[in-house]
Image (cartoon, rainbow over all chains, first blue to last red; front, side, top):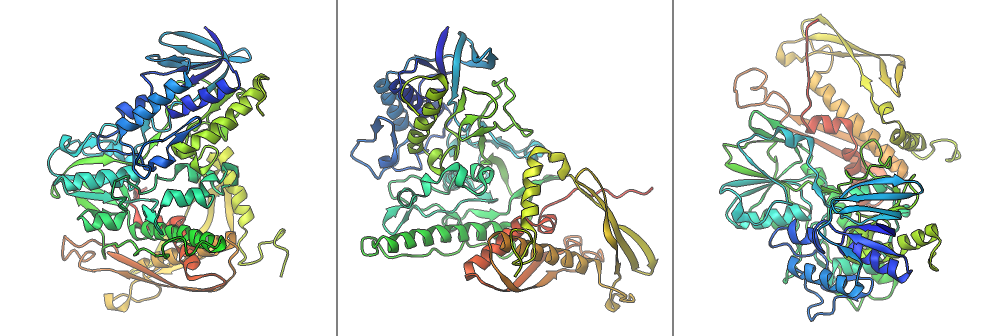
Amino acid sequence: MQTTTVVVGAGHAGLATSHCLAAREIDHVVIERGEVAHSWRTERWQSLRLLTPNWQTRVPGLAYDGDDPDGFMAMAEVVAFIERYARLVATPLETATTVESLTRNGEGYEVATDRGVWRCATVIIASGACNVPRLPAAAAAQPPTVESVTPMDYVRPETLPDGGVLVVGASASGVQIADEVHRSGRPVTLAVAEHVRLPRTYRGKDILWWMDRIGLHDERYDEIDDIVRARRLPSPQLVGTPERITLDLNALTDRGVRLVGPLAGFSDGMAQFGGSLRNMCTLADLKQGRLLDTIDEWVTETGGDSQFEQPQRFAPTRVEESPPLALDLARSGIRTIIWATGYEADHSWVNLPVFDHKGRLLHDGGVVTGSPGLYRIGLNVLRRRKSSFIHGIEDDAHDLTDHLAGYVGAGDGG
Amino acid sequence: MSDTSTSPGLNGVNVEHLLGARSALGETPEAGHFKWRVTNQWLHGTHSASSVEGYFGLGGEHDHTSTFKFESDHPLVFAAEDNAATPVEIVLVGLASCLTAGVAAVAQVREIQLRSVKATVEGDMDIAGILGADPDVRNGFNNVRVAYDIDADATDDEIKALVAQSQKRSAVFDILTNPTNVTVEVN
């Protein structure tokens, strides 16, 4: 089978890419291991809602048009939105087709699937940013008496054993899971490493509205000081609820969740935690303060002080005097550890020399290094800060398909 | 004031060199593997002398500009001779020196002029641990507090951020806050 471009993955990124390729009249096919929006259907916990408000849920050619712009989509709604998009784009789609390898074929590529081989000039990998959980080395030493769960196999609190739960990581996943598990009567200890604290709303607007408005989401990858760090940053402590609540560490402490430092390891049935909890919280408090300062300055500069609610500052994160440095898992009743320590993209099927010594894909804003015609879309801070969000896909898909059109010498793009 | 493009200037930290080293490590990560070495010789009682001469890094052996000597002893209240600081005080020296170096380096990157940086360090210890008097008490510090007094051309939050970032990148802070495998053998 032959085409100009193979797109791997039919989530919002792959479909947006398809939309842009079609607009440039570039012949292509989208290959999907399951069905449209596969990861959203199968790899998310039950109560999860998008972090981004509905008004922000847009892809090239389709924007949310329901009657609750300030709400947050549940997973079934996300799947329905992406299915609707697939019908609109009328993407040439091969579902239930798993890509097994990507190799070079002369000037182009060969994409081997379990349903045949595609030959093409260019490939766009759109297979998601969160394919496998990223576990710290310490996870290997976890005592076998304790259940180990990742956010990808976590469903709801009731599927966990009764008893205490240690949640490792204070990302969006970590704080959301910690909150609902604790409320289910399973007391939660939360191991906190570096994290991003954000209020859900500020001066009457959603914090993501502000980040769009002041231009932060448009900051380009090549303008960011430390792009490696920016791409690895845990997702912000946000949750999408009808009440638009803030779910920071103080909110969790109020509900009885206990905070400890970063998980350092296990020894003799004890979980050990670093003594840097206070600094982890100070870093996040200061960073949140700088963001709010930036927003206030923007409002003042643009003469909008009367349009918005008054500025406010949030109480520093409370840390107990001497947080425990070790917990005996058995004696403290901890039956489960949930590793909310991040996710990684799975590129194990890419059989090309395009990875660094740590196995990270080498690319310049999605243009893969040293392999002309190969692209990656849908990674954190790929080309802009907003690349991590659904609404960030539009600009990235335009940019990368422009580049691709220039490479194959088609269309008027670029 | 010297030209910052050719010399460190500001706080006197050669940040360009450090940032250059960081990007070089991206290409040759093995160059970043260092070995720091100390030798220690017992003198008398609890008094001992350490020297620091050379280290391994950037793929080769290096000598310090001279051999640095450190002595350590225990205090009179332990019925020792108090010839020098205790080992745990030297650990606190290491922590403060590391954090202060970090404050200067981060300030340099952020173009903040420092005028004065002073750290006061205090470590709490219950000696029931080292005396074996109470098995529930650990030997080491149960809390360490560092207080910084910093005079610089920056806001209070910018100064707090310097100190926070310094902790985040500090080797000794990490050594004190996280477990480390330590192997002690007899030759």
